[in-house]
Amino acid sequence: MTIALFLFRRLGMAAATVVFATALTFVLTHLAPGDAAEIILSRVFIGDPETAGARSDLAVVATRFGLDNPLALQYLEWARNAVHGDFGVSIASGMPVADEIAERLGPTAVLALASTVAALAVTAGLVAAVRLVPRTRLAVDAAAVASVSIPNFYLGLVLVLVFSLGLDLLPVSGAGSWRHYVLPAAVLALGQFGYFTALMNASLRDADGQLYVLTARAKGLPPHEVFRRHVLRNAIVPVVPYVALQVAFLFGGVVVIERLFSLPGLGGYLVDALDVRNAPALLAAIAVVAVFVSVANLTGDLLLYALDPRVRFSGRG
Image (cartoon, rainbow, N blue to C red; front, side, top):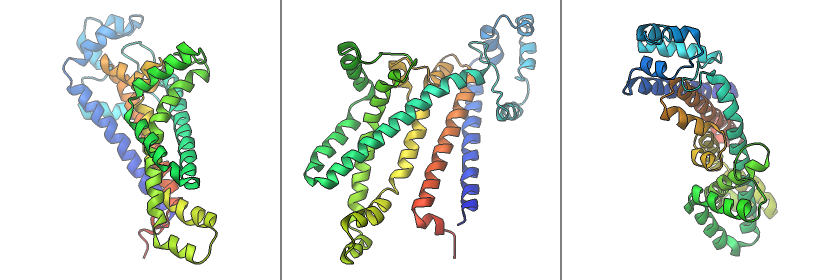
């Protein structure tokens, strides 16, 4: 399979994912109880002269916002504007949704990437420790189980009590500098490294017992060459898509941590939009999350294409 065909297929799947997620959200928001025009009248920015003049006329509001069109036509209009970066106006604030999303996207992206890098670094250190000192395997497995067993919110409270209130080393909340991201990134990293470590150790044990590894050792290759060329390269293959999915999940699934540390991120924005039925903001947040999920999956697929010959040669012959 050529890289062009591989990319074409994956990009098609990514586009289908974004369309399906946004279309489903669009339909569900319109099926929810309550009239959309009445909600807009009760929440729109009073300073808008056009809306203020139509405040007593639901039909005028429905016409202005396209609510009297068929549902499919409304979605197509929204999608056309969204492709050009226009997600509409927030019902809650009266501000452009694109500007609000841009403000919220940065903290979530920094938090997701920093926590994933930290989790991978911890995982690499623990895996190396097990390889060098096999007797540490039990302790590493226990640490991995503990990391996935402790709830994130509880771990976050403990870190706040120790490092913020106790030692006064790090701020409790906000997003003003890099110091504000240390504790939330640490909480997420400690929650991720357990999964990464358990999966990586299991994959390494499986690769160690493969015939091609035994053959390489029988040929007299140095142990570090056997590990680097045959064990590690094959053991990392099942880990790559999992890491990609974790990064994608963090872009929309860190609501608890963002709330705990008062980070103005995308997850909290999505929940706020859902609470007040802010349809434009909700659709935009879902669209952005779907795009990042697709990008993360595409990145994982490209890494698999580079690492696993079976992906490159599937479909040939």
